[in-house]
Length: 176
Image 1: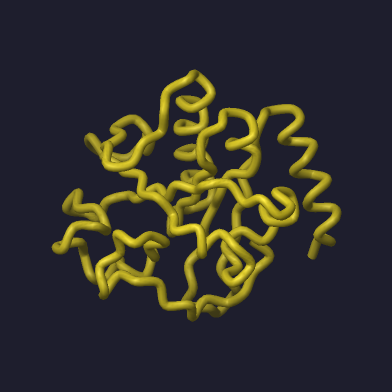
Image 2: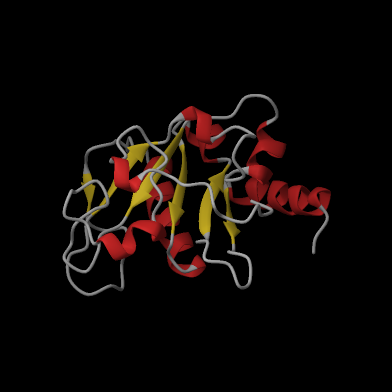
């Protein structure tokens, strides 16, 4: 396992080179938890929120975050309530994703979603948007008919969470 200072140095080098970096957090072996990936440096580079996505394989998550980061770097404002159709490429059909605002309480140290980010952001965590992706019927997690079997794969870190979608903090603490 890498020392946190090594991780921070590696990410700082990526941010210096590319303007931002993605940090993947894998679920613990044998855990029922879900992995996630988030950006670090996007806010500093573009004045737009950092991004987080849950439940996608790391390479697909990174590609989706890259697509959104490229939009932000090109000057497009990333907004909530809008469907983005060109983010999850390689999946069949026209897959719409949406961004929701992450409640600031989820960004702080009380949760372990942004551990490495918190080391780099010091005492000023930026705003964060969560990328939501659809179930097999193209329903997003904010839809009342979203596939109940998939709820655990996308905990909602927002006040937009329905009561049966709210985050239950049963995941393993990770290096996130």
